[in-house]
Image (cartoon, rainbow, N blue to C red):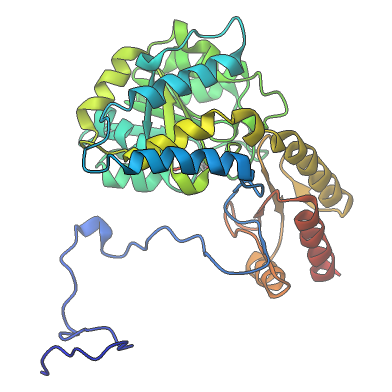
Length: 380
Ligand SMILES: *Cc1c(COP(=O)(O)O)cnc(C)c1O
């Protein structure tokens, strides 16, 4: 063995005992970390980001808010994030309209992305001896949240067209009697929105809580179809949203949930102290002041989505109906070859979903044109 070296820029990792591996929990032994490739290519349509960043006026307002937060970084942040929760409640009330749910800060909770919100939900309502039911094909992170929180994962499969029959799904819920139901609407990676009838049937059947993950709600063809309006009648309903997609703020890491105040209180039992930094809170509050601008691109992205769906169908491909900012299309005998051939042409999409399908996020019109031109070459 040699001693530690102080040579700068050493390129080999400092592994001294090749026969040692970290004694992780047994569930983690063969696991690999979440890994959508972050590749530096020209057209990146792989993680459903909004292609339009904040304007310089919005960026300047965020910068000013962060600058004043910086002067108090010796102090812990507001661990209850009250000002941010008030701003989120105002935002949602504005979206729902006059007959809205009348949400207040007591109905809102925020964390570092809706990923963290979802883990907190399972920490509070799942856990050892408890179960969570999801509807695959769906978001690839749910099994990881279940594993991390020792919650047993149960599934009820979607139909071939990725829809869910309300009566059948409700029967599945009654049979499984899960502590937590997670319905993703619009669903990732299929783009499928849940009908009001499906939401009603699941809320009726569920013995525990029902989480509706509405990460893509603003992109729906009918954005009025949101579970938010059902909150007043259903204390066991939790509606998760994020600032990462329509809101064009993925880099800030802000997700949130709207629910009955008693549910929000329960989530506070499991959150880590001061989980949401003062910088994050200041950023999100400033961004919410510019909600109209940040959301302005949503209409364009929705019409671009419909254009891409139409092109793919005209090209003879199968495309799932999409209410989100991405399209799932196929089916390919060797989807990896298609994915790789697109990457070779500078277009990164996502190899995800059921076998034979690929998912492409909707970008700017120029990015979508580049994607479709590259695909035309690959298919020819
Ligand atoms: C992108 C996405 C989220 C949002 O994750 P953040 O942690 O808020 O960035 C949540 N749910 C689904 C289904 C998603 O696709």
